[in-house]
Each structure stands twice: as structure tokens, then as C-alpha cells.
Image (tube, rainbow, N blue to C red; front, side, top):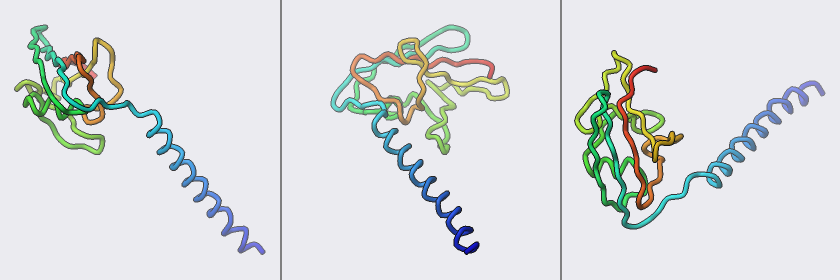
Length: 134
């Protein structure tokens, strides 16, 4: 009798874990940002630490920001478990020793996704700013 009870508790835990993971997957698919297929033109403005900036108009069929920026050869970085970790933008590499990093915004608002999962639409304006300090 005790043996059956000791097997049931872990089994119930595993079932609950599977249900929670499945629910999270469904919620992600329901609420993930939608992409826009077809030709579009976006603007990428690169802002350096000294305040100077360069603006690039990008015509693309890409659905996500990373592909559009890579087509223009604007970004480079390292693959991580979260996607591309952008280290270099427009030939300027962030110096991690000085706590420099690239901040991505859209229309002046924070982006809560990485470049791999940020959808783009015609007319979008992205700012890529070299920020200092964590």
C-alpha cells in the first residue's frame, strides 16, 4: 500500500509539470508578436555614445529584425541560447570592459524581444543605441 502512494506522488508531479509546459507553449503561440510577410521598408538609426547617428533605410522581405539588419550587414555578434547577442553595429564593437552594450528600441519605446524574434512591418523605425552602464 505504501509503495503505491510513493509512486503516485512523483507521477502526479510529472503530469502537472507536463500540463504547465503545454499551457505555456499554447500561451506563447497565442500571444506572440505577429509578423508581416512581403516587401517592406524600415529605418534603422544607429546612435553612438557621443550622440552622432547614422540612419539606414532597409528594403526587405524579412519578417524579423535580425534578418533585415544582417542583409544590410549592420550587425554582428555571437549566438547564445537566447538568439544573437549583438556585439557590433555599423562596424562599432561594444566594449564590455567599459560596460557598453547595444540597446534596441522601436519608435523610442523599449523592445521586449531579441533581434531574432522582433517582427518588422513596413514603416517601422528602430533605434540601435550604444549604451554605457549596466
